[in-house]
Length: 286
Image 1 (cartoon, rainbow, N blue to C red):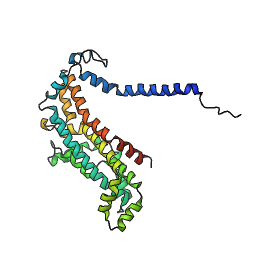
Image 2: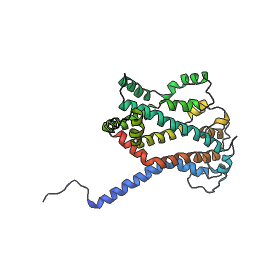
Image 3: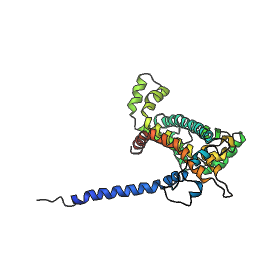
Image 4: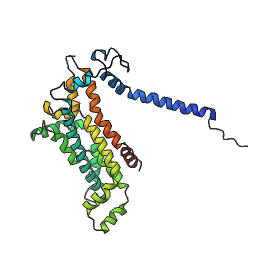
């Protein structure tokens, strides 16, 4: 009688699964530890934050949240609103501009299409910091410093090549027969784009929206560079106000407001999680 041979004994299979689950749980806790430590620290009295490095606080207080909310020139809700305005405009800009550029590269024919597509791909590899100085000089000459325009306007000009490439990959997976059927019905490029292609691109659009939301909301460098007026600060830049170079930093309120500023990101991510997974799967494997 032939033996199946190489498979592990049945007795050890549950142990193997148990080991994998334990390792995954330990790895997950290791990755979550900084976040858990920040949540725990936000609930401790400030004098215990660095004296008790453990996750379980010996004394719990909500003073960091109430004190941190009104500790700056404006309430922290004011800075959250500034972040929400900039992030919303960035999401809308990227969805409109990147989808149109992607449709052109994926479906239309125009002179030097391959060359411009290669240039667009090459811009992905260009470090952002290389263009900071010329961009700052340009925006300063047109008097856009201390306004939201240097952050928002480039989004409406399809400057995020990564999202264009992501949508191009997705649109290329759609059957061209759909475009031909729309053309037979008398639809032009705009109608085909709006009524045929865009409704099928929901996973790619959701992926673009989620990444744009997270990257813009968390962006510190660009917002700190262009928004220096205290009335225009966003949440990540406002958190910097809790730190003092002389050493007298308000760690407790800063951790508490950091937790508050993470709320919109978690909410947006959880709302679009299924579209994010589907979008990455359909654009990354085909």
